[in-house]
Length: 256
Image (cartoon, rainbow, N blue to C red; front, side):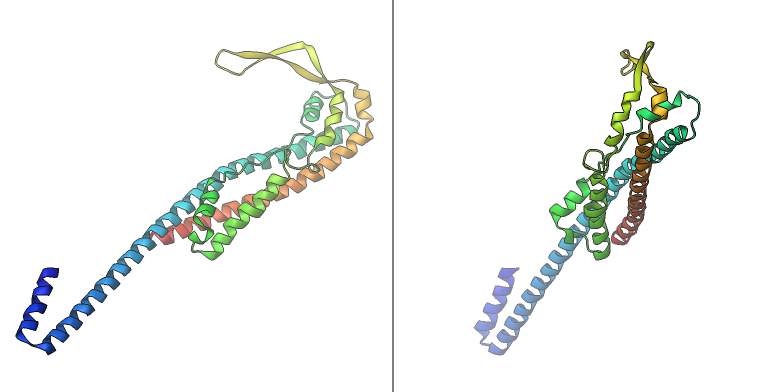
């Protein structure tokens, strides 16, 4: 093609037709410029397409991570919900001076039960690696950042492993009212053919337990703390579910 154009220019020069040569030269320049612009446009289109594909992939990975994290949040939510019931039942048993019940031992064993949230972060880490601006929807990008960097961090920070003050270790000393019933031997399987011996836990010094006003106060404090944690879990669960729906809508928009 280049030889063809060169031959045309040479023929025009040999003919001495300067006017036609200039017009042809200008036309050739215009064609080159148009070719460059078309190439740039195609390159930009290709880059935009790659960016959009990456954006969709990150959205999908973040959505999958949030769904996995939601399962952990819901387990923790259920744990605190049951913990409130257990603490309240033991507290009310003592306050109302009810007769001995085998369930007291179980409620006392679980009195200091707590949760630790472990969110799945790979999608958000991929986003940070690619650059937050990879997500073109400013509002959705901010919501995702807030979920991971504020809401999730808050839930992690109030967990049993992370919080020095908002856990239930103050109930641990009341394990003194528990003992193993060595005459009640049982077996628990932990493999296809393997099992381990364990003993039922029972209450000792029941009369002292029923007179322990500090235990009642600490159970009351534990209930309030569990309610606080439960409300935070509920809020983050709601935000996570809303964000999943918004990500779905954004992915549909980008794919169309």
